[in-house]
Image (tube, rainbow, N blue to C red):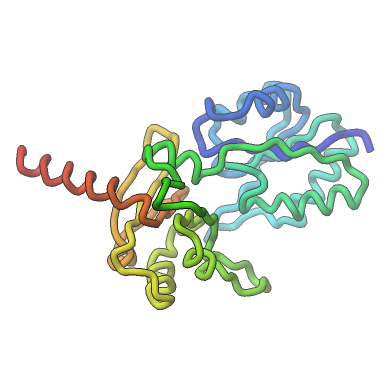
Length: 248
């Protein structure tokens, strides 16, 4: 086998949040298979590479995983540096495990380059830690989405057993998320932060509570953060809105 396949994390969106290792590998890449939401300026760092879009978008026609696996294998037979460029971190809801198992089973060398996952970028954007001394000592990353033929998810139990939860791929799922957590006994007053396009100029941040979450909207890429760690930030946001309305 001629080449190495690098599973590279593109981070949450902003190109300058890419790691130095990722930037160096992209600059040397022969071919790059990239997700749909990777920033064009990040892809452009692969100045000598052929670029192939293989993104997956919920509710839209997307590239089958088995086809991506086959393309990576074929590329490794003819190229020295093959990059699979994934949004966020490859090891967080990125199907990296399937690609690693397939490629290594075919004798292909695989390396993983971490990226900043959306929950960490959102925490920085909000200036609210995922953990807070005396308030939040545990964090869970979950998604309510379940693929066809997959086992039922235990994401609700994971949220109930953590102080802070980051819910990925929740765009279009807010009524389901709210209903599931309320029925499981999570307090109606639980503070919630909704973050869209984290790290990008069009980032949007809103606060709400679990009891009215089903009436909210969330665009993609979007993230739901919930837990007591966000109570003070939500209260301050409400005070800012009230002050702005009174001064208008």
